[in-house]
Every structure is written in C-alpha cells, then in structure tokens.
Length: 92
View 1 (cartoon, one colour):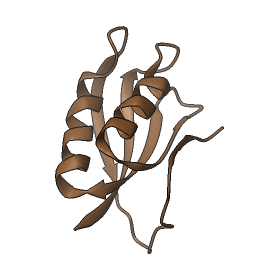
View 2 (cartoon, rainbow, N blue to C red):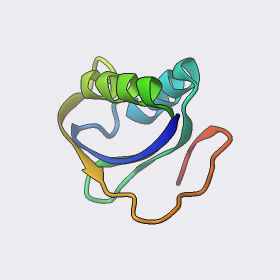
View 3 (cartoon, rainbow, N blue to C red):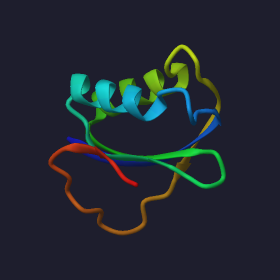
C-alpha cells in the first residue's frame, strides 16, 4: 500500500545540505515527491511511497545530515487527492 505524507521540518535545516540529503534518502528508499526551503526557515517535503519506506524516511529526516539539527517534524494533513509523483525533486 502506498501513502502520502506532507511534512514541515523545523530546526537548523537550511544551509546545511538538508535538501540534498533528503533527495539521496528518497532515492535509496524509492520515495517520490518533493522538498523545498520555506521563507520561515523550515523545510517542507511531500513523500509518497510504501508505508514502511515512508516511515523509514521520516526517521532519517529526524536525524538529518550531520550539520543539521532537526527540532520537530510536523505532519500537514493531506485533505485532497494528491498528485502522483514519479520522481523526487527539489521545488524552488
């Protein structure tokens, strides 16, 4: 079964390679979706994939790259039918 999770990641997550880290982890786990920096200093991500893979991805995002310090990951409710993504990309 495939699921979609929309996340907002708080902490020291910009300027530390967090988006690159997220792309690498997504490719390794077979996750589709996107990641982007937000103007408020957070990182936002949409993850689509198998339940176990998305759960593992969230655990990896909590750890982040070595220079990051994740303080919180909030899940944003997905209220409508999300687009089906075929890759994982950076949104600008």
